[in-house]
Image 1 (cartoon, helix red, strand yellow):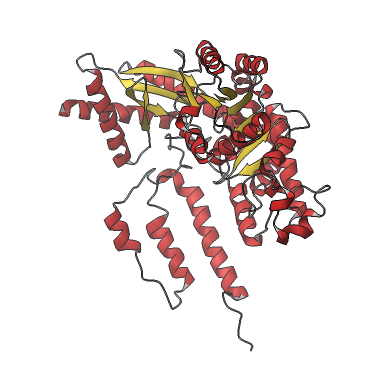
Image 2 (image 1 turned 60 degrees about the horizontal axis):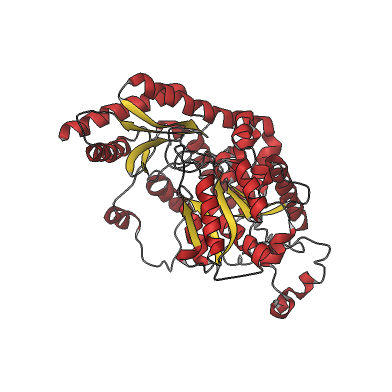
Length: 480
């Protein structure tokens, strides 16, 4: 029998390994609720468990999967756990997980049309769906990326090219003090100096202040600077706050500024009646960030940049003829008819990102996604009601976009002491393992933040989580 080529398994070995891996994933889905939400190991322990020399000889792959099952997957923050209420959870669905398997298994290169025309058509279809959901016109377009950070960076690159024709040291971008940190990072990567980003104060609802923004624009114009872009929030990570999108669209139209809405978390809620009301005006933006791996229940990594005018992406990212890669000559000869995604974003090499979202939306239908998002709204509302009924909590920001923030109430303690109690409560909750709730800072004070958007979460678990938070806060408070 001829020797097998390198890096190959037999049919039976592939079947066996595939069954072992699939059983592991199914077991995760079926038992996730019974396991701790968060396990973080010290570096010394992970070194002992997992450090190995560079291997020259083979290890049976079943043994390697066993190592992953025993030592790796259990020791993590499980963002798809029904009681993961920290950050923005990423609850997934099994259909999309299978989509990820198919993407990796077929290893489609989806950077240009020649390589994967049918896959490219599915991506175009998915982008069109998302544009339709947010209310963009048929001329709209977009690009699937790794997540909100890359989508926000790409949006500013497109805005700068569209409004200014390229880099300009006088260009000014406006963000609120609640804008996601990825925006500052993206601006730095694109070459903006710190003074080119204006941080605008927010109002009592932590929404970008229109009067403060208008004053900053006027001041910059008077100083000879070039205001060109406003970044609005379509559901902040901190509190779920939505900036006044309609008035901001009016202001940007009047001032001829690009309006980008960072809806990485919240924009998907537009498919519900409540979300559509909260996000009114988003459809008038020039660009929108929307992460399907957040509130559209997809596995990491799947972000998206949507643009009102699809042509702005090629203007920003297409390499001019004199700099074009010679090895892409056979691809670019047909570009007038085809869609080449590498000309619409940063990546040339990119996977078939659209498949998992296309597969699950076709399998479940939009109505099921809508129902899942509505559950997130209701769970946050129930958390707020439970907190208020307990009498020991101050609700700092009410339930909005699936987020509620709150703080321990004790008239005998100073604000600084309550801050310390908040941080201690987070630590005890994480050690306990029942649920994961993290803190954030609002107006200089530490607060607890609950984001219960996993559609498998239930009211009893919300109530039990808040009860445990109360017990842990009392313990920390008693320590002085």
